[in-house]
Amino acid sequence: MSRLWLWLGLAVLALVAMGAPAWLASEPRPVVTDDAGLLSDAEGHYLAEYHRRLLEDHDIDYRVITTADAPDINRFAYDAFRQQAVGSLSETGRGLLLVLDPAADRVRLEVGGALEGVYTDAFTTYLERRQMVPFFRTGRIADGIVATTELIVARAQEARQGKGFDPTLAAGFSLGGGATTAGRIGAGPDDAFATGRPDVDPAVTPEGAIDAYLEAMRARNARPDLALYSRTTRAMLGDWTITAAQMDAIARAYAGCGRREVRYDPSSERAVALCWLVHLIGDVHQPLHTVTLVTSQFPAPKGDRGGTRFFIRVRPDRSTISLHEFWDDLVLSSSRFQTVRNTATELRLRPAHARGQLAELAQAHFEHWERESVALAHEHAYRHGTLPGSPEAENGAVLPADYAQTVKPIGERRITLAGYRVADVLRQLFE
Image (cartoon, rainbow, N blue to C red; front, side):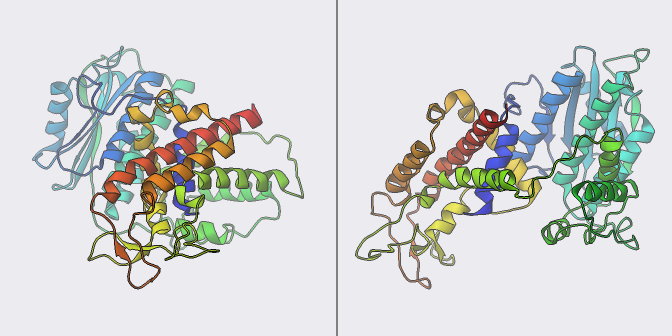
């Protein structure tokens, strides 16, 4: 099974309970204005989901503007705040506006008057320099915007728990509060919190590993190669942007957590069973995981081995791949966490993917899910046996011109169904 089907299914699972409007259609004014063309549709949807959460949970109207023409970003942000009536979607006039001008290499978070007690100039400067700019330095502009938005939500949650909004300040307009920072786009990675930091030895117990990890976060130790981490974690973090703000947020989040009873199951049976459960539910939703084509070209008993020996080319100028690989990568070919999460968010927020629109969810048994995939493989993946394919790995047959665009919506629907079904099974097990 391709890991991407598993990761996407899990990411959709994480979004099952969120429910949200389409990112622009249902709002009276745009939530995201991407005049600089920095954001993909999935990233726009993801930012809109955070807008919904901030508005519903904290009554904050949060907007994002990217622009290619802001000679004075401070004035631009102030004027845009008023022109777009930022805060008008909030019942109490609480508004935030994030403005990015990549051409001028400047970024500003404009804070409405009702929120200046929460998003102070010191906090917004810290947010920009310690969270946003590290992403911009590596050219990951959209990721930086999304990561900053996550901390904006976290700050609102903290304020709600103890640091309340300042009721004495006027609502519904900007007083010029906020901060402006150089974006340093493309300047290269910031290794200040990784270079020269001490190593952290592996722990003997799970609770010891957690303690050591949290201490590393408190010390802002961003080394991706800590001995504490597993080999897989070190490989994953080697390609990540780890910011000071992220480490601070982790340390703060767990600072007040006491330790509950620690239980050990030497057999680890439940953990292994859970892994297999998620793995198999994800697997069965990829049609080519349920069938093997047997023909004179792909004779019994092995046939085409679930499409792994059925070689194709997407276009005449493309390299040969197997049909199985094509379907594994049909929805997403990247395994980067941010990309997977953004794609999952976009899939989850489609009206056609709402739970009530997916009639297949009435079927709650694994055997039926398998039959769904078998039918889809026969009708769409192999086109009733008419799809051209080759048993020669060096000479794949060219797919019909309409094949990819026809089957991609099927793959997207299957991944979404897998996420819902994993969620349903876990609820049955643990509730």
